[in-house]
Length: 217
Image 1 (cartoon, rainbow, N blue to C red):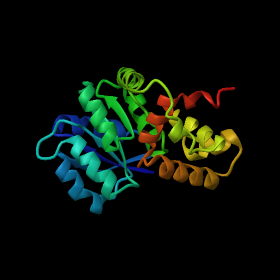
Image 2: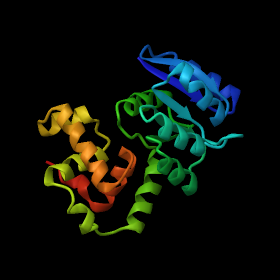
Image 3: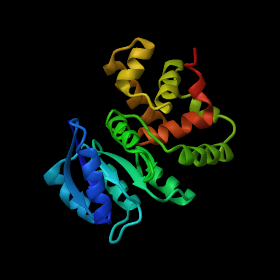
């Protein structure tokens, strides 16, 4: 059971989302908040596994709330669901620690699947948003930083490449025939060596360095 906290300042949107998500027995709505500050106040009581987060809200917007949630409750994943696909919103949300980024015209079946993927450690991103992200990454860095990549073993680079494709630790373990615990240790080591805080930041570096091709058959 995945416990979901909905955070959106539009009551009709919240009710619509509640109706959609309630159709799946694997999802449980544990709270509805109309701004980021309210969501933060509710977390200790409702203890969600995932926050479905809008961005442009009063008092505390979605980017600010995402940052505080990820800092204070690192086990809780944040999946952005918004109408905004402007570059600054996309990049700020990802930097704040959002696991995935969807637009509100996402079909209901895809939304439910994305919530489950996010809870499992994957990184669902709307195709329009993914295009912006990849274009930004390509413009920023076109060649590997050998000083950083040299810190990683070949196996760590392989794990990082699979992580960047959105695979969970369990899926990485199955792909390269390791235990899930061993993969978890590799991921922790990668985070420490690259000085990143989450999978999204690590994935961006992997994409920049072309590591997603290491595990291609």
